[in-house]
Amino acid sequence: MKYIHKEYCKNPSRWLKTLRAAVLCSALGFAGIAATGQATAEEIARFKLTVSVNPPGAATVIVEPPMPPEGYEAGTIVSLKAAAEGTNVFSTWTGSLVDHGNPLVIEMTNNYTLRAVFNKNINIVWQNFNDRRSAAWLMNGTNILETSLLRNGKPMAPGWRCTGVGDFNGDAKTDLLFQHQDGRVAVWFMNGTEFLGSSPILNLGDPYSTPWRVVAAYDLNFDRSADILLQRHDGQMGILFMHGLYIFRWEKLLEGRHPGVDWKAVTVADFDDDWQGDILFQNSKRQLLVWFFKAGVDFTGEQLLRDGKAPAPGWNVMAAGDVDGDWLSDVLWQHDDGRIALWSFNRTDFIQGILLRNGKPVSGGWRVVGLNR
Ligand SMILES: [Ca+2]
Ligand SMILES: [Ca+2]
Ligand SMILES: [Ca+2]
Ligand SMILES: [Ca+2]
Image 1 (cartoon, rainbow, N blue to C red):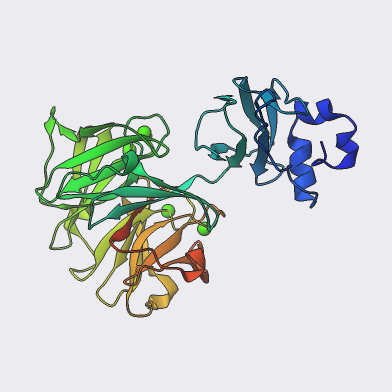
Image 2 (cartoon, rainbow, N blue to C red):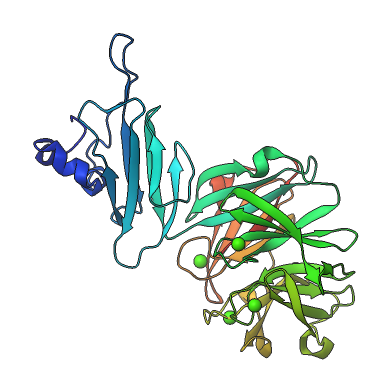
């Protein structure tokens, strides 16, 4: 037990019952967890489990059975339960595996290093417009924790474009919304980055199709069913109010009023922290405009973000939602050269621009298509 602060090392079982101590030790700068080694051939194979919590202190991780000092015997079934402290909300396990189950049960057939991530389960969703694969970044704040190919990198059928994210089956897990260039609209049901199944959006029981462009999914009327914002080429917008996959009402937004044909609706996000979705627009000068709403689709006003300041040439707005972890919506940009940047906002007050991945570009064909929130 050389890897734990000495106070806890005197009594390993104390640490093993609650791994929070290890997290605290780690947070205090003591060597986190020991080097984990495979057992030599003449010994019984034993494996070590290393657990941490992000952010530190967000939870107590209870491990059953506790790990013996020499590690678990191969094949031991171990249960990990991340019990949140305070208002922290469990997001996922990352590290040796990515899993959204809590408790998590694993068989010790390898050394495992696992991190229980709390609060922020931001997925930036990607689509590759060359090879049609899709992927997600699991973020913690502006740090990228994991990169996952969706559906193990299986290319999607030609002609489909991911248009956003929302929960379409009421399981509180974010699903992906797609539109085909022929107008069909479909959903991928997801459990985190795990693909569960796919279905068309249905209108009176038949697959729905529209010449209007699908802009985004957002629950605009607070019934826990994601609704769909559409925009026509002339700027008019419409909303499909949904019950799961079923359209129960179509409504033309504000009887066809729109900010002008040069303004393209980008997405829906809450920019004034009232939980009500607002529409983000961009024009050909790449200025950003927000339309605010209350009570579903009652228009309450508009505002140019950053007083109409546009980014440098080459940057394109891709998505909006909270990335930096303050629960307030930010704007995500992608440059033609593949760099990703964030405009961080405090409601509509600009805070700062942040280059993700320290400005390292994302290689060819990948475009941000969604951001969960
Ligand atoms: Ca769902
Ligand atoms: Ca709804
Ligand atoms: Ca709002
Ligand atoms: Ca934010």
